[in-house]
Image 1 (cartoon, rainbow, N blue to C red):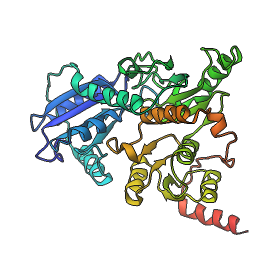
Image 2: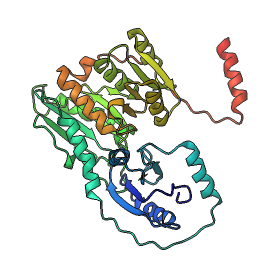
Image 3: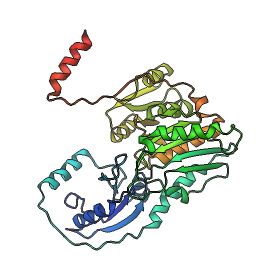
Amino acid sequence: MSKILDNNIKNIYIAHDGRESFKSVYKNLLEGILFEKAYSIKFLGMLPTPALPFILSHNKSQDSIGIQITASHNPYNDNGIKIFGPNGYKISRNEENVIEEIVNSQDNFQKETDYDLNVDQSSVDLYTHYLSEKLTKNIKFKKKLNIALDCSNGAVSNIFKSLTVPNNISFVLLNNLSNGKNINHNCGAVYPENLSQFIKDTNKKHDKNNNEWIDFGIAFDGDGDRTILISDSGKIIDGDEILYILSTCNHPTTSTIVGTVMTNYGIRTSFDKLGYNFIETAVGDKNVLEGIIQHKAKIGSESSGHVIHADTNIIPIGDAMITLIKIIHLLVTSNSTIDELYPESLKIPSELINVTVTNKKSWIKIILQILRK
């Protein structure tokens, strides 16, 4: 990385999602990055991935980049990195390829580097203050909401301690005790059925006027950029359906919205019937963001739950916390429930199956022949 960094880069912000291996990755990052040049390292501790692009974009500094140590929705024993440039955007695929080529050709080297884990709290506060402002600004919370949040024992686990929350909003926090080995373990966005069952079991015991009634739930993924929504009846709502709910409730039917080649056909046709201009991109939140910018779209998402909002372009990736806030505002302003806004699933049943083959092209020809018949 130090070989391809712009000479103007002076500061590197580094955060992680709570895996126990982050210290090893962090140490090796520093030994590699600092091998050729002395950068100012700003450690942010355990923080959702979207916080990094926010901090970079907010500071408007061209001398800083960000690195998130994370393996997202994968098991705790996996780890990796996500890299963000000075403007908060992920680095390009070409830059990723250059890094991979250098890594694969590099001789092993060792440089002992002293490092500490003192958190740059002022930078962390920038993000939490932004979320608090987004949550409370220009809205009157007449409606009381009780929200169940499955934090996946990951990056969002500690964020709610620092939020300013209106009196009418309460959070039931689940799986928010990260121990380095429990991230994504039978919880979070990978296992939304567990949060669904919790909401069903809880709401069976109470009526809607009871303070214990759960109005909806959110299941986060490990690094806090994906969202799966759960209604008060326990209905599981993925990224395609979140896109539909937020688009049809918040934006005119003449609006442009962005999905991917994986967006469910039932959702697409529903958008078409209403008059929305649906733009299809390749899979990947980079591609969704590119589609939003190119077509001046209001919102975009992936089926997996990455939702990108054009009016929060200071965070140029999916941010699960912003999606949570958008849903809270929607329910407060509409005085509705999720099930009222989205009573029946519009998705057409589909299943993704991965098949290992020796030659893709020959199989595609066979599949095309079958489809033509």
